[in-house]
Image 1: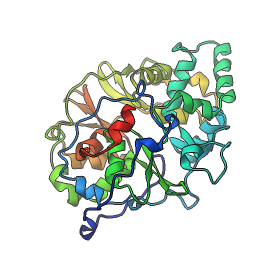
Image 2: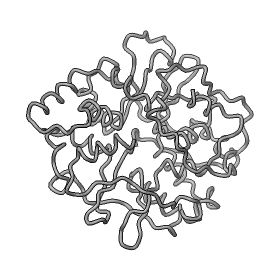
Image 3: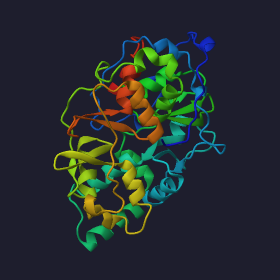
Image 4: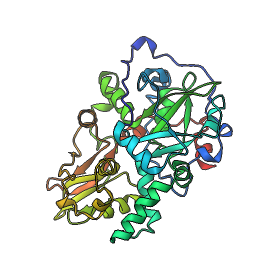
Length: 368
């Protein structure tokens, strides 16, 4: 998870419908806060039947505690990509909101926050800066390192609008709104702000939603007791992969090309590991980071030959246990021979538990 977030138990007495108008409005945002639909994955995962919508709509965003006593980590827009990498790696974070230093403290959130900087965006930006070509010479590595050191995160957010700053009102919006964004619409992290001053309160991650589900399993037993096949989460699909004999660059380029946040690593066709955006954080947290891009996965001391899996008859409860206790973001669906059949992500699970109401304005926002 991006931030250490704890959740409250769901008291039965609090599960009453909140009567309010939808406050998420496409008109309150600018293009700086919208994902570029060229990059954003608009292939929606399967929705639920809406039977749990009232439960999540009755749960306020205050159910997710503040991430730290010092507030939410933000990165100034004039920070270089190299400095941002170090800050995120040192704090063990995957992303942070970008604060426009040209805006005064009393400005609204629309002006104050211009996007999110995260490792997924960095992977895509890095590959595109190299024209998709793997750097191989000392001069090319030096040029890439200089690009990281001379580019600000403001420029990075302009190139990666598929990781936008998408806020919800901390006091008026609900967990249902957060789940629709994190699930159906594939936003990895949702910021909460207090109106009218626009104070940034917290960041809700997909992992935080999974923790909420895990901590309240009895309340969702009707769904979590079903197998992932019964829930439609076991559909076989072709997934891009790399072999253990390929490099980190190969993995990162595939992630950029396919808009993946991770790729499976195979040996003789069988699953043996996983490369994700977390590996970029580990890589750039040590010396000689750029040269590691050309290292074969099988020869890298940073590569851990481990990937978490599930089978079609596994229950959603067992998958939630695995996700929560390992703090991973996906499990691979495999057959008896460890061949990858599909992937079950946090997004897939969250999307399957809710259904977008007819009156929702989210589709209008993302289609704009």
